[in-house]
Length: 508
Image (cartoon, rainbow, N blue to C red; front, side, top):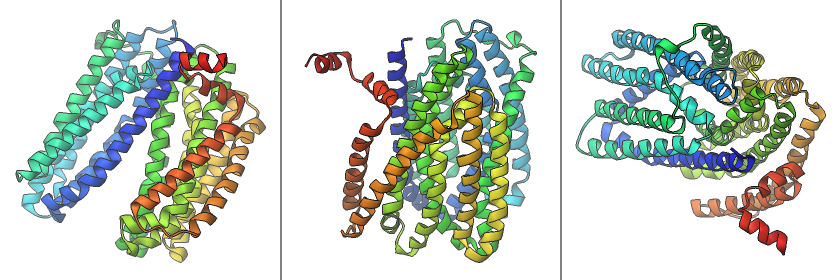
């Protein structure tokens, strides 16, 4: 695969993943009132409880999904390891996780009285848990094939399958809820559509890697410790994520009541959408870094790291500051003026989002270099600091205190410890790295400061006016950034121009 084709595949993959995420956000936004109306508050509440429990199943992989993707990508680009052996070993481990998932599902099913009091609702709860637990158990072995799709940079396949699943699931949900079915139907629809997606990914993985042969007999027991040595730190990092993102709502509910959880959740939801968009774009580069590491191309990896860092900084500053400027009016239009208090924690959390977004590529580089043990430790430290500060500050400042706890911990970990260590691992000048950040942050501060002043001079009271203002603001910012991008990034962007057009331009 040539460098140009690799770049095009990455860009198109990132664009498709972003479009897929945007479609998911829009569908979720539109479907929520429909589902609530047809299920009713009580049954929808039960669906949310089940969804929250199933959401924790993702932590049952103990980080093996990231290990699988890393080792498969490394085996593909290295002649020292057999790809089928690595994949078979991963399949063996994921099969064990499926068994654990079934045991956990049975345990939750038997614990139904602790979650639901009404006997009729207990039966429904148990059925839904069993169905969705089966879906999770089926999922784990198929993660091996997802690793192949990502290793070959075929993010287009993953996107097409995801969008197809989403549209199919949405259509079935609308049809069956309209006919009067309940959350059991939702669970069955989810099981069917997700299983369809897993099978489709497996078929495509076999097509793009015809020599792939997976058999439990081919597993290599010597590889298993390597998988766990890599994955255990991913699991530790996920524990840090729980402390950073899952605990704040419990702190708020305990100290200032459930009502304020909603206000804080609005701010968090908006910040999460930005984070998901960044992940959709930047998450595609892990196989690229892994390829350079496997081939010992350290200098190329450093150069690409700086380029992708600049892309990360640009996207972060393209998305977050506008949200800070128009956030108050948007919340009023979306949720109502009674939730305007969510704007202030949004401002505080946006600072943390900017710092985390600008340094997000460091995490990808550490995972590719198998140096993510450090990230796991500092992520856990960040989660602990966040919890401690939130418990202290919430008592005096309410949800603003919780937001401050998150932001303060992020400043220390994501803006100082993480980039400094990553530069040491890559043998890269910390000054050279920070020069990129300071250049874009300085420009963004001046640019958005001017637009904030302009925003205060006009009256916007509808979605159209808000959208128009944001489009103008972001378009001008993107155009200006083309002038301040590094020469390396400008050269990479030129490669995206079709050869015919580029030749015509150079001829003129």
